Length: 612
Image (cartoon, rainbow, N blue to C red; front, side, top):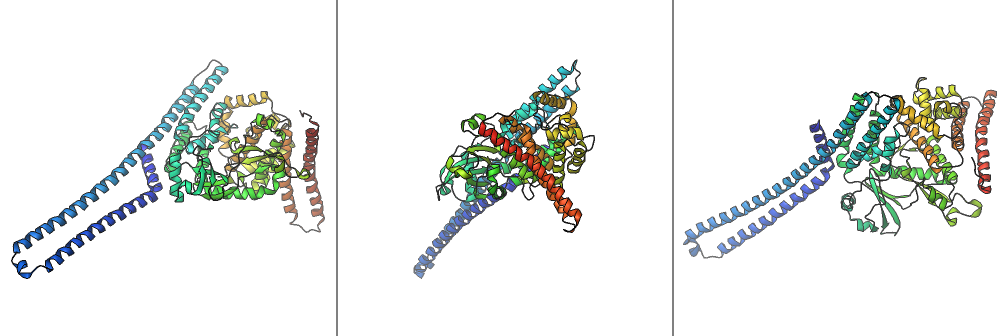
């Protein structure tokens, strides 16, 4: 197995270094040819001088000194032999030095491969053994079993965190995915991995300079008059530096990919595949290969920053005239290369920094509402892609001055929501979007039959799986999910859900989610983010406003589908006229509820009334 990993890594390294090695070889060959050319010119010049000297010598003297002629030939052959020997020695020394350096690099690379592989294998073996012992042990009471299992979760999570942090790269990316899976993993795992959201290993400024020179062909100072060597932030795949463009003097954020990523990603993917395959084999009730497939299908797209520039520009263009509803600001892209991205410099505070929001008189209710509009627009609007990494580390809140807000008669929010990291987007298929919309309208209307029908349509959920799926997608107890979803989630309900997961529902949930389409998992993740941010913001609105906003988008989707079907009949057909009216009336009722709530919220803000 190790030979296979080492060979994979060696091929990867050779592929990644091919351009650099070829350049080095061409340079050395050029220098060798240049040296031989100079030596040859020198030897030719010497021979021509000797010939001219012999031609100017008298014939008598030349013929009378046959011994001298023989001696000259011997000396000439000796000099030529020494030159050839010297060049051969120099060539052999250069070749030996080159191959020694190559062998040394290969040895160092093999050591790093060994270290990375050993960390993963040892940690996985220890975690497997830890769970095997705890799950196979008999306990006197259920409380003792839950305590032992919780301690096991914590030990394994901390062990895994240490390994992911040491190996960095895509392992940090995996840790970020796991930290957001609060609907799936025990809290001991998700809370342990929270630091991965904004605390990642930093690449040295020397390696950053080398990457910039290799990719751009110029030094940093030729493009930037200022470049802060200390990164503003570090993520799993890149880090961001503050800089100033030399040409315009504008402050920019420079996103530079971690230089070591390309060398190890294929190896790391193979190791990840190995670990998750082992989990599937030894713990078949916990299938995790879907997480590997999701990582494998997306990582190489995220590594191409030109794609990120494209996604950011397209999303910015769509939301440009929707700022009054969403307050969304996406940094403008200046230019991009596959491993370098330069954007305008914008910064702000984390959305869960309540003290910052209160200090700048920013309404937490408005922030929550705008976040709902942003992500619902992405999910339910045709032609708009969904941001695939919507965790709190990729969001920031920026206060606006009175001048930035515009004239008094058309003032918007006193803040902007900045969305970072546009490396990966997905588009929700039309049929799935429509079934998903009908599912949520059924949830809001407490229509269990409709919920079951549309859950099967968009996620392939059977009747047996439905209660668990309904709890996962709503974040609520099943009885609450099917009857009173608008109520605020209590601490008792949260504890009940956590206890149910640790008490045996976890394997069933993982089995269930491993079979749903990847886009549904992304939607689950987005729902979980907005739900978590609502709770962190401690809004006074409760979940009702969030669900009303979602219902509005769902109703619009269903209304568009109804009209599309009605257009297939004649405009003079009475059924079409009646159908158009019915479709509009259903849509109007949904919108009216949202408008009524917005008016109430406006009065609340004016009169400073606290909503319960």
